[in-house]
Image 1 (cartoon, rainbow, N blue to C red):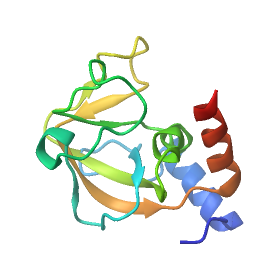
Image 2: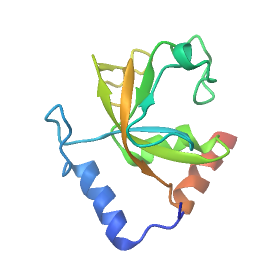
Image 3: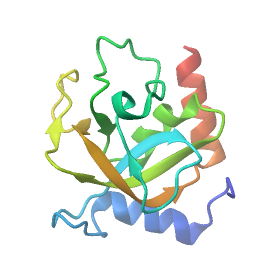
Image 4: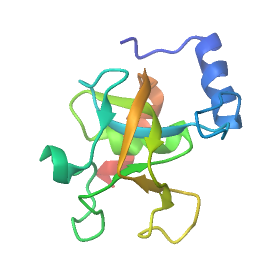
Length: 139
């Protein structure tokens, strides 16, 4: 995947963040999940309890539940969750089942969780955004 985004793709991603794309729930804003490359469009992001995958991020296990997957609504906010992986990408997903605010986050609407989500697109992370996210992890 190309790490550099052209002007057209940047505009498209920016437009999605403002609500151009409409998902199956009728909501115009997409959900994003930062992770490691290797999954394909049409496959599912599943909780660590089902996949035995290590939890995404450097958050203690008593904070992030292993029975949910976590998503954000802004592309840029998914980058830190992907940044610690060897091959970081951002998955655009459509959650299935109940979606709820992340109970471990004080600000409602910042992070969400669900039991699973179908991958609808895979985005590379612009090099400058990835470098900033990796620097944030080092702090």
